[in-house]
Length: 479
Image (cartoon, rainbow, N blue to C red; front, side):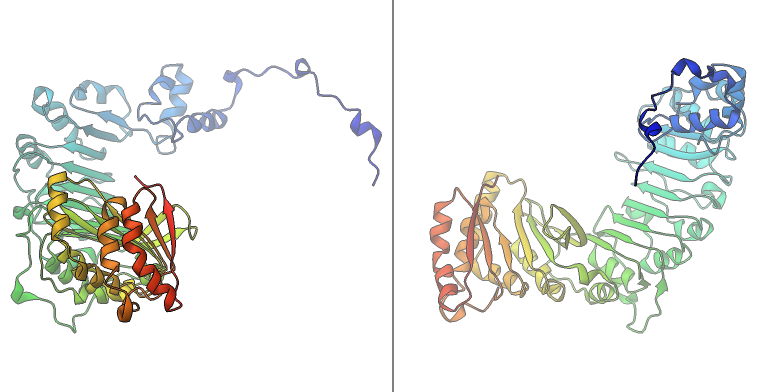
C-alpha cells in the first residue's frame, strides 16, 4: 500500500494559529471535571476544596452544586469552632469528625457540638476516654441517617458501655463499624438496623461488652452485604456457657458476601460461632487463641471444609515468637513468587514458645496440611536467656510429630536459630524410620553459615539417598 506523499509533508501546526482559551471561558461541566481530578487519591486531604471556593463566586457555585461528586466534607476536630464553621458553609455538606488526641481542648466541647448535627455527620473517628464516652452517650441518642463510617477507640481506661439508645438505634447508611476497647452489649439488637454494613471490626471487647456466639451469629445474619468481620476479646474469660454448646444438627445462618473472618479469643467461642454460620465466599480466616493446652475444634475444621479455602493450601509458614506461635497456610501469587496470600492463619499465645502448642495446632489441622508443598519455618524476636532455656526444652519427638502433618511437603526452609534443633530432629528419621515422615521432601534450605547444622543433617540425607528418595540441600544467606 502506498500512502500519499502529502501525509509525510505535514508539519506540526503553529500554536499561535489557535484562538486563546482562558480558564474563565470553560463551561461549568469542564470546570467540574478539573475539580474532580483534584480530589484524586494522591491528594489526601479532606480540605482540598477550600481553596477553590475562594477563587471566585462562579467556582464556589460549581463546587457547592456538586457535593456528592466532589465528595465534600467539613472536617471537625477538637480545635474547630463548630458553631462558626457550620454557619459559613452550605448545610448540604456532610461533617467528618476526626480526633486522635486524648487530652482535648475545652474537654471536647467542639466534638460534642459537631455530633449534635446528627443529620449531617457522615464519618466519626475518635480516640475516646471515660469522660468523652459519657458525653457521647448523652448526645448520640438520635438516628444518624447519613453516617457511613464509625470508629471509636479506647486504649487506656475502663469506659462505660454504649447504651441501647446509641445512634438512636438507627444508622441505615453505615458501611464500616470499628470499635476497639468499647463495650456495646446491645450491639446484636442494633446491627440488623444497619443493613448496609460491609465491614464490622470489634476488637479488644471488654468483659462488660460480652456478646454470646449465638447472639452474634443471629445479628450478623441480617447483614447480607457484609464482607469483613473481626471479633477480638480483651480477656480469656470471655467464653460461652459450656452447657449451651451448639448441637450437631444446628441450622446455620447464611452470610453470602463474607470474604474475611478474623478472631482473637477463646477457642470455645470461635467453635460456637462458626458452628452457626455458612460463608461460601470466604477466602481468608485468621484466628488467635488464648493459651490452652487442650482444645477441641471439630466445628472449626468442619467450617473450613465447607469453604473453598483448602484448595489453596500449597504453602505454609510456621512462625515462632517469644510469646506466640503461628501456622499460616495459603499460596504464593504467582506460584513460587514473593507474595504469600494467607488463606488460613492460626496463632496461639504461649509462654516461651511451648512446642506442645505447635504440635497441637499441626495435629488438629493436619487434614489441611496434607497438601502443603512448601514450608518456611521462621522465628521472631527472642530474649537470649529465654531462647537458651527453650532450646534445651525442645525434644526431637515433638518435631517429628509436627512433620507427620506435612505428607506432601517437597520444600522446607530452616532458619539459622533453629538449624541445629531441626537437624537433630531429622536424625530420628533414618534407618527403618526414614520414611515415617516427610516422604515427599525433595529440597532442604539451610543457612550457609552453619557448618555444624550441615554435619548434623548428613545422616538423614544419606538415609534418604539409600532408599531412593534423595533430598537436595541448598545453602542460603539468611538473617
